[in-house]
Image (cartoon, rainbow, N blue to C red; front, side, top):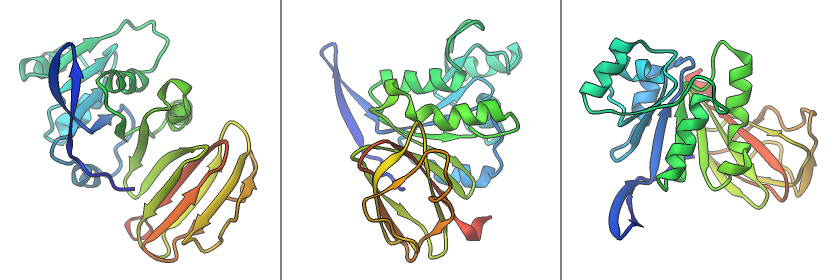
Length: 236
């Protein structure tokens, strides 16, 4: 699920602005593979830290361009460090309707960015993990491609009509999980167990633990919502 990184012009209030095609957001979850996170970064990425994700950035020697949240997960000294080094600070009240990660996604969207890579979105709290996995399905974010990465695991959402390619090595695991209802018209090419315009039912497990036959597979979804999980086996 690779993405190129050209710069796109955006016309706003009479000015031609150059914006990155991808934002990389560090959430406040567990970063289980720091080296993999660094390798995934590309020149031109807009780096955003969602509250405590700023601490992960600092541990990796990264400076986020934007730090957003209610800042209940970092102290004043840490916040002052980022502000002094040029990070834009966007503070929200503690009593709010969105998680810090959703605020970060919405802010990226407001900048015209439609391609987002999210790090450290999974972790110890199951409620936060489930919510983060389902965030790409939010209707307000449907114009964005949001990919969650945790070491060898990648998660991306397909909406009805989408076709995606996944890239890896033979034997890598590919699981397809319907969310919000049944996934209709699912077709695959390049997987060990192919599907031909078939249905995957919400709450059932038929789509789990498929595998790449080669280095690429394609997945088409006719209708519904479908999480695609790619696990690179030789990185486990």
